[in-house]
Amino acid sequence: MRNDKADEGPALDVLVAGAGYVGLAVAVSIRQARPNLKVAVVDAAPEGAWQRDGRASAVAAAACRMLGHLGCWGEIAPHAQPITDMIVTDSRSSDPVRPVFLTFGGEVGPGEPFAHMVANKVLNGSLRRRAAELGIDLIEGVAVQAFETGIGRTLVHLADGVTLRTALLVAADGVRSRLRDMAGIKTVHWDYGQSGIVCTVAHERPHGGRAEEHFLPAGPFAILPLMGNRSSIVWTERTADAERLVASDKLVFEIELEQRFGLKLGEIKVEDKPRAWPLGLTLARDFVKPRFALAGDAAHGIHPIAGQGLNLGFKDAAALAETVVEADRLGQDIGGLDVLQRYERWRRFDTVQMGVTTDVLNRLFSNDFAPLRALRDVGLGMVDRMPRLKDYFIRQASGLTGDTPRLLKGEAI
Image 1 (cartoon, rainbow, N blue to C red):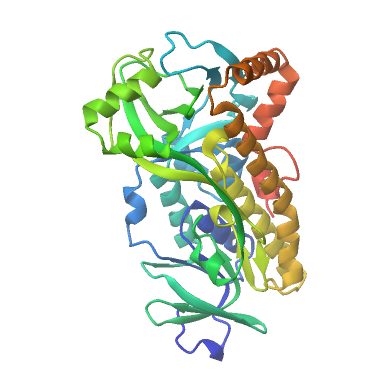
Image 2 (cartoon, rainbow, N blue to C red; image 1 turned 135 degrees about the horizontal axis):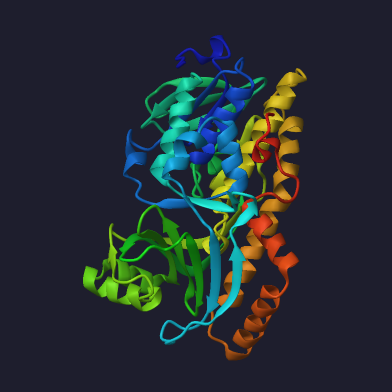
């Protein structure tokens, strides 16, 4: 698949930079639908780094359908924890009682939860297995050094001196995308002054598949159910406090955690080393250039308050794959700007809408202003008494609303 004399022939149709779930999903989706297209993935992370990721992600129902069609969900499902219901509270961490203002049922259809919690390494491993079955070349531990776009092709120069020729280069290399910068694409960005602390806890009693979101003055504190008596914690704090917490003694951290987690599930114990990531909003001004497309966090980084970052990325993957596959069937240039702009138009509004929504929610709930607290609690209570509105929110969270790509409906492209 590698070609040192890149100008001698079109070695690839699609080269994806980034072997996270979004990059792998793009590659697998295109290759499965169009086996005639030559697809490869290049990733800067060292080989095997993905196996050391101890985090878990909420995978919405639409993404589960997509993974099912791609031949991955059957392998993932035995390791996935369904989210059967969800509660929302609004309080201070010192409050002895946290009244529940909003509850959601967890199904979008009979026997179909609106989301599952899946370990990142299980999700990544399944997509890697499927990529290998489809003959997708995976080049690990090598970064893209530079690329040059010309007529009919892009030359991609790797850090090991190899040059690849491709009709389309897809950047799925994360929110700090180097390829986005190389392409000269600007972003809208602001920092929230918050960091998200992520860790896994074990607890004495079963969680029953319930997810909880506690809105606290410093930011949301989410408890997300995992397989067994375990839960994933996504804990937003002001950055200075988050850094202090993850650097503190384990006992101190667990005391602070318990104050927010509560004792409803018995004694808790942190299973891994907590880590913190700075939070902000990042939106790319353009999603595409000639022979170049952004997908996933490279196109948009949003606050985790709604748990939709990964699922936005899967929507990108499904929409980009559908655009590329349909163009190829029509004999069009899959890297042509007119083709790629269809993908951009498809995804831009949804992305901006979700970015604005999470920004507003974070600003609305991450404070302790008493009059605002009273208003939002009344609002949550009103929503809780409106079943149709609650159903709409569940379908929105499941990824089944709007102009949904076929793969997210579980259909072939």
